[in-house]
Each structure stands twice: as structure tokens, then as C-alpha cells.
Image (cartoon, rainbow, N blue to C red; front, side, top):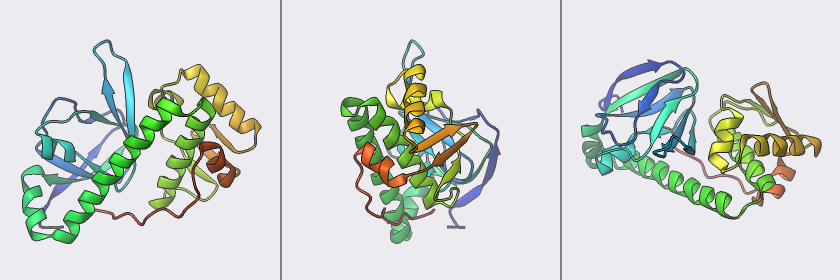
Length: 216
């Protein structure tokens, strides 16, 4: 991968990494830090479509479709590995195993978007929040930035509300309900998981072991 690497980049919190409707010459792998993927309507309303964690790939959409269909903004200081977008096709020709990893990550994003559609369209508020917390905690466990019972939470409750199609007040009340049920608690930028199995039951998630994800 060193032959494809163009360099490294550090960005501050609230820095836009890619913007909807633009074509970036670079692709990024997140080495450290977190971000959100989102779309913005003409009146300024925002729909969060994904949470970016270490190991995630940013900018693949622009590499394939000429321009980004969503924006990505850092929610914490980030350390990124930078690749030239023009080299992506060469990588697919010269590194088929690594190219499969990129395809795996893209397929996983499609899976998450499908889950997100089910969440917004069919799940109750309690199921939505439980599903989101279970998913975030599981992904953080995968990349070693969480323990079995807790994780630092760089995202805000407003980010969560914008991802789930709920008002901030409704999201806060639902989080309070999960805390009262002694399942999970999110406060002061810390997510605590008291009963992950019950959280999965509320969300309607089967507790099967997740597939081993590649890191690029």
C-alpha cells in the first residue's frame, strides 16, 4: 500500500473532509478520529447517513461516480492516510486482494444504509436508538476503541437524532428510557453498555459474531 499512499493529513474538529457535489482528487483512510457522513437539504435540514470511525474509507463514491453525493465532516481531530484517486484503478489491477477489501467496505456501507432505511421507516423510537447504540459500540469494538462495557462518544445526541429521524427531545427521552431500563447510558461523552444482549433484543438484532472486517 505504500506505493499508493500519497501522504498523511491531520485535520481539526469541524473540518470538512469532502463536500457533497464536489470531486476530490483524494481518497482517505481514517487512522485516528471520527466524522459524520450527511446530506443537507436546501432549507438546511440535515440527514446523517453514517458515522465514520478509524479504519473507514472516505471518498470512494467520488472515485466511482465523479462527485460526492454526501459530505463528510470531522467531529474530532483526525489523522488520515491520503491516496490519489487516480491510482484507484491501478490498485484494482495490481492488488486484487486489497481491491476486494475496498469492495467489502463499500458493500458494508450499503448494508448499513439498508439497515438505516429500515430504522427510519419501521423501527420505533426505542428500537431506533437501541439499534444505533448497539451498532456504534460494535463497530468501536471492532477497531479497538471501546471496551465490552463502554466507549468514548465523540458524536452528539443531535447527530444521533439527525441519523434516526427523531427530534432531539424525543432522542433524549428515549436515551433516558434505556438508562431507566438499565440497558445503556449516554452522558458526558461516554456511552456505557450495561446489558449488550438486552440492547440487541430491544433493537431486534441477532447476536451473531460480526464478520472480520479488513483494515486499509
